[in-house]
Image (cartoon, rainbow, N blue to C red; front, side):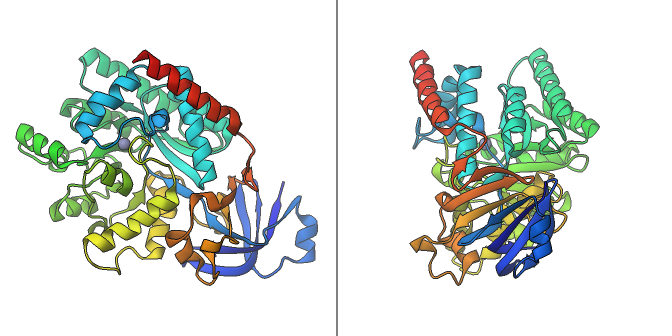
Length: 436
Ligand SMILES: [Zn+2]
């Protein structure tokens, strides 16, 4: 079933070309044609569906490279605490009470929010009910990289059990849902996983040929304690263990890294998910992203969970990524508009290993969003790329397609029951809160 979307302004290709008026044709989930001007009569006749994009801007969907959708009931539950106390005193006790119904409510809420704000692909790192989430994503139509997260502060038997669950999940779901779902293995962090456990996880990841995702150097305290215990920075420790060269790594945060560490990222082709808002809110610091980009490190953008953000709005995240490095380094040239967009789209897709995702280009997956370009804050219309980064809001997104399937049309969600999901989220939050 081919679809032709015409009279739309759009961002296309690697060279970040803006077309003021053009059209796209997609079929079987892929873009067949991207062109400027008006479609030919024969093209209009041949298309099974024709959509008028008048007044809208077409952009690649956003790729959120780090998050925990399962924690979405924790939005606003605890703010303004340091990361270790926030986790130990607030997050983990609440999460200990979560069950299948509450985690499902949390994830549905996250999916609604992601679709509404333009995220077509996301990473989920979580330890509960991952199979159920994969089934839901298959049905809802989003694209995702999923992993059963592992904390190794437990007996060896429990470690073995967690690793088996994680590898079974990775095997079962990798490249499923029409290849919309990819998987990784995920040791939670160096401070929650002993080196021997990390080594075992890396072995399995190499065997399964999937990448590894892990929180790294998020806070100064965590790095200091690692150095006290092992006399090495966590990244240097991983290098010494010999696990960096053998596997493909995507690290979340990477806040406390020096120049030598950035060289290591480059040498081993390690990727970083930059989560500026979460890092600011938890007082963790600012990752040296501009230095990483200058040294050719692949960087994507992530929101982390709504417990530390507190939204999943990738436009806001992208804007923060563009602002913060200019401010910190007193250099307005850093992270220009094109770089911010690339990190939030194509680089993110590359990091999550979704091929041919993240650009409006022939042969690429038809994952895209439309924005209502009529809002006052998007006038005058002369600078759409600038507006996307510096002026737009997630709520400007009106339509979403993933692999050619519409998930939202004119602000109406097509694969999720939003009213029920919002009701359930409130019910489940109150129920879990009453158990603590
Ligand atoms: Zn995280």
